[in-house]
Structures are given as structure tokens and as C-alpha cells.
Image (cartoon, rainbow, N blue to C red):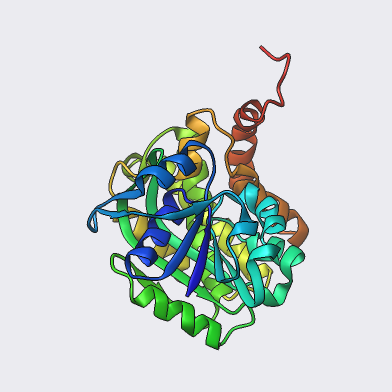
Amino acid sequence: MRIAIFGAGGVGGYFGGRLAQAGESVVFIARGEHLKAIRAEGLRVESIAGDFLVRPAEVTDDCRSVGQADAVLVCVKAGQVSEAAHQMPPMLGRQGFVVPLGNGVEAAQELGRVVGKDRVLGGLCRILSYVVAPGRIRHAAMDPRVEFGEQDGGQSERVGALRAAFERARGLSVHTPEDINVAVWEKFLFIAPFSGLGAVTRMPAGVMRAVPETRELLTAAMQEVWDLARARGIAVGDEAVTRTLRFIDGMPPEATASMQRDILEGRPSELEYQNGAVLRLGREAGVPVRVNEFIYRCLLPSELRARGRLSGVA
């Protein structure tokens, strides 16, 4: 398959790199020093599943130079999805389709408004990885997994083709659930509370899960997302909160989330698309989400400062 990886960071660099390693025709959309390093030295991935180097790596910052892609994997931050969507049409032929792999529950709808709903699959991934230097990705924890499927359920030829491509790759697993919307919301149930509370407490997984008071807050925040999903007609499982807590209990004690790291390091984050989205969607559905609202309100000043919106404030 001809696969474009829009965003060659921790997610796109890892999964795109594995696809390229398996012999797929992969082109990375990157920018800045990361683009220059990949172009000059290839894409280096340090992974607990085995290090590897993609060299030469096809990389560009101009979507018009990509040609026609069979699939575009969207691996940018949630706040960059809309901007990315407007750059994609030159890459999409008659049968080309798009798969968001980032955090949040709104990316598929954002993409669909620009490229057409029928071109967009639902998708997600599970991995702890990040850029450590230009051209260099580190996969530090979690068994890498990618999931995708048609938004209205069922299988399709394009889902099967992309699954086959991932199955040829090493160092990851692939799943095409019957209801991708449930899978996306069950990941959201984990990532928004874990990221937000981690940023508020400034603590990694091992501390948050061990202190009874923060574990109680984490559980309550996840329950709110469960309530919200069910109110929106998403059939998340009855055991989703319990299962997610077990997952957190099995994480490396030093594990943190990307949103947490962004906030603590003073960078713009996905706050509006994680706890902010819980609050916004909760208001729309009439579902109280007080713990997530508390997290959002506590983190908002840091987010505004990182985005340069607190000018004149000491």
C-alpha cells in the first residue's frame, strides 16, 4: 500500500517506521529540524520491541509532492487535526481514505467535515513513545497496538487491506473491532482522566494509583467519561472502568502521558480535546462531569500561558 503518515512524532514515527520496515510504500509528512534529520540520516527508532532504522526514509513537508495515497494515517496532536485535514486533498485519490490515530473522540468528525465522512475510518493506537531528538523516536512502554474500522461498523475491503499491511509489520498488533466507536471511547476513558490528573498532581502512574485519594479521583473521572459515552449512545462495556484501572495498575510506575508532559514542560497541549472535551460534551448531553471540570479549570491557566494568551499577567 501507499501510506502517508501525517505527523512523524512518537506515534507516526513508530507505526510508520514499522510499516516501512515491512516493505510498505510509506511517506512521512514532517517539518522543521525533524524533517531535515529524517531526510539526511533516516528515521531511527529506539524500542523495547527492538531498535530499527528506516534509511532512506521518504519524507516531505509538501502534501502535493506525495502523489496518490491509499491511506493517510493522521498522527498529529488533536489541535492540529483540522489544519492537517485541509492539506490532505492532494494526497487522496478516488479510493484514498484517512485514519486518525491520535487522542480524543472528535478527530474523525473533524476530518470528515473537510475530506468527506465516507473517506474517514475511526481509529486509535496504544503506545508510549515520543521524539527524543530530530529524526529519533523512543518507544518506552506498552505493547504497540493499532485499531481501526468503519465508523458505521462492519468490515470492508479497505479495512482489510490496511489490516493486512499492519499484520506484515513487526513490533505491533492490529485489531479491527466490530464497533470502533466503542474502542475510541474506551481509550478516551483512560487517556483524558490519566493525562489530566497526572498534570494536576505532577505525578507518574505509580504514584497516582498508589495514593488512595488520587486513585479515587482517577476512578471518578473515568466513571464520568463512561456515563457520558453511554448518554451519547456509545455502548461502552460495563467493566470498562475496572478494566482500565487494571491496565493502569500494570503500567510502568514512571509512565506519564504526552499531555501531562506538554503541560509540565510549558508547551501547548491537548487539554481542550481531552478534559475540555469531556466538559464540553458533558454540557451538551446534560451529564455532570465535575471531576473532569475541576481538572480542566486547574490546568487552563497553564494552557493559556503556553499559548501566549496571558500577556500582561505576572
